[in-house]
Length: 373
Image 1 (tube, rainbow, N blue to C red):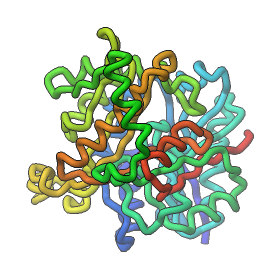
Image 2: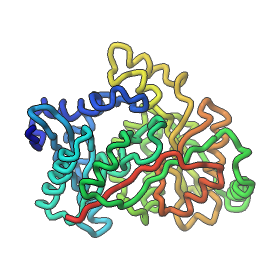
Image 3: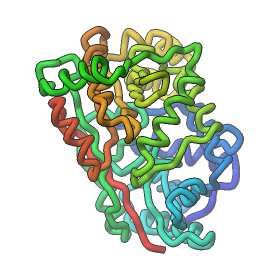
């Protein structure tokens, strides 16, 4: 049967690109269908701020007219500027159990990037590492949380068989955030000293001032994450979009800033897992999806700790321990008694040790791949 790889060029092909995972994974109990409307907006050059500083091309694989796979190729110019490299990325990888189609899709993405002067391809990521990133290689039996991809086990051998090499693993740690007995006592002491000895105070963000609070978060992020392998600073356009996104899931219990002498020195954002609601919505707002969304507080009982960091010059203060303990306090005070922390780079020794100190365990592992072009 003939195989064809072609760049997406029409509204119909965009729809086919979006629909493929619904067909591939509809019988998988762990897969959670995203909202189709949100996916259309995310891929829109008009609505996604990625396209203010990056470019991308989408591809579909067909066998005798039937869509059997998809992929994106993208260039994130701020990433190249920060790291002084010429890398390109790929993402949105979905395919049937078809080695030929997998290799052809990855070759198409690589060819597009090579033609634009890229010398290395990494991924998957949709479109950046702060969106859905990595290929699931451990934890197939667990539901994905918000902004976590889920792929079936056959994806890994297909990707590796197509010539992709491991670049980095991303770890997700499960935490019983209502169970303080699992926390090593030193964290409580450090959290107390952060306030009494170093004058650090944790305050909650508010919905009314969320956009301004995200400026403070970005200041922390652009310092605390600057040495990370994947780092890209947040732009104003990124923060505008992030504020709109967070408004849909905002809960002041879980959005925190650590301050010292009026300066934001640390931040933690734990997002209530809207995937528990999306499962009931089945990819659509109508006819009853909106009703499940409005009742989300009755459904959600877990969070994803997506960001927790402290500026390097203030890491001696114990602010990180203070943010950790505040998350445990919120776990005891709300319905959300557990969650997952991450992803965390496998090379981030300090954060991984911190997860161990809080009684965490690795429950999912995502792999980012690379290929020299």
